[in-house]
Amino acid sequence: MSKPTFVYVTYIRATPEKVWGVLTDPKATPAFWGGVTVAFEQRVGSPLTMERDGTTKVTGEILVCDPPRRLVYTFHAEQPEVRHEQASRVSIEIESVPGQVKLTVLHEGFAADSKVLGMISQGWPRILSSLKSLMETGQVLAPFANADTHGDGRSAA
Amino acid sequence: MDAVFKALADASRRQLLDRLRERNGQTLGELCANLAMTRQAVTKHLGILEDANLVATVKRGREKLHYLNPVPIHEIAERWIGKYEGHRLRALADLKKGLEE
Image (tube, one colour):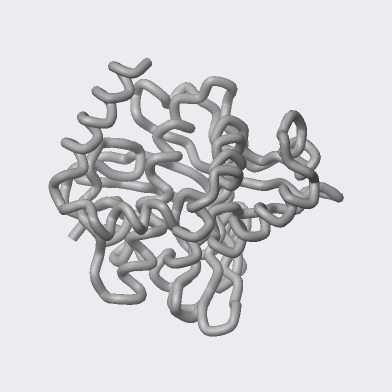
């Protein structure tokens, strides 16, 4: 078994169904994903796209879809400077804990000296904090400050 | 948030986070190597970091791997950093780093 490169955890006061619903709704993702629309069908083998302003940033394929608990997909960055890199793998796990959910993101399978890896490590903490804020208060956080795979300086609202 | 500040208010725990930042996904044994702390002390500190959600763990086979989880620190930063200050703060941080290296 390979060893995850990154593990991110946040606790959200919400139900697993609500968190799953927001993560899988392409209309909902831009608000907390730095303006990125994440679109896929909830079935194994479905293609996945992450797109902002009409530009495809990431493509992938759904490997595991177990609502509302577990979603696994491949992650292939499409920016010209990194598109030669192999696809990595994202696992999102949603667990019920008393009064809230534990949301875990594992990201693994990067190429050695991967450039995508640097972009990801900036992006996930923002996405998860924004998602938490949105679900608990209805407010998103400040717009993302710099450009990366997950978002740039545009308002997330 | 209290748990995060309490966890960070200790040099040994910050040292453990630094070691995970250098290399993520270490076992307890790896984290204990070359540290002037007993295994018991490291276990206790890791427990406090885990309770504060600053360290996340994953089981792989028989091993428990420890990861630096920056999400709570990001939440704290977002709370007090103004909407449009992010890039200026980053520029200042880069300048400080460049001058001190």
